[in-house]
Image (cartoon, rainbow, N blue to C red; front, side, top):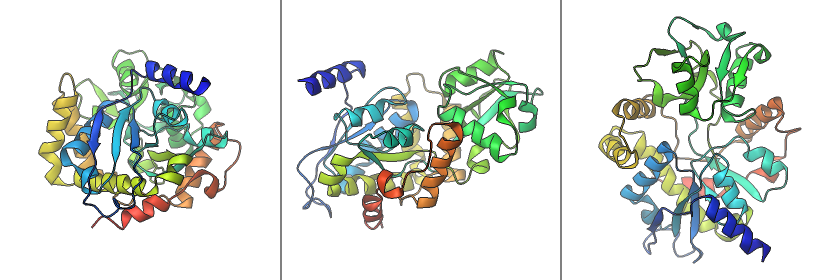
Length: 338
């Protein structure tokens, strides 16, 4: 009874999960072995995620690899992880969160299974002429979202690797990427950590030299994919098919061939289409190639993420790889993508 009530409460709070059935096919390598249970792929409903979800549907990769899967939505940065631990979703492929490792360490029955976006699609913005370098941030206010959240953690790591004392910077919680950016435009803070989607904005802001995280933090994996231990145990073939589908989507997305499909998908999911924002994201995909078709992570990459969490105080010590990660499905999926 308690489990049922908790599930109902979760569904109410997330606006009832569901984007729609995407696939089921009888003509792909893993389908003969696949569990009849449908794999529920969860993401939060942000613009970038919604664009990828629609592209996945339009390009039909899930069907091509025989995945019996359903994409559902859960709002908020912790929404996908909460959905998995509540038993209403099985795997998250594209909604990264820095609290995944700490919650696994606390005992959540979840494991990291691979990577989403590998390169950090974030940079620091400031008003033109105010701040030029990372050193100039000392004594200044920087909008980064919640304390110890993703934007805060990555900004601290950026400063740490640049040899700058982060304690000399005043971090301000202004919410998500867009809210942080808007706070600088309004003059409420001196700088912010925000998305590459703002690189083409005509708002008087410029990027701070040395703050492009895709270059400054090359060892950092921006998004991890994670799944419930139950799904890993009972739906291996389905997870393999899903991961192969996402690897194919990422490869397609980083190619010029995806241009028209990407812009069309973004127009469909964005209430008021912003061409400059879409172009900034597209340029990032093409020039930085932030994804990989092989979604597996190395032990070194996982330990780098753990060390960031430790430095910020979200973790007390490294956990052994076998306790927090399982790359079996990612390795199997990589063999399916030609």
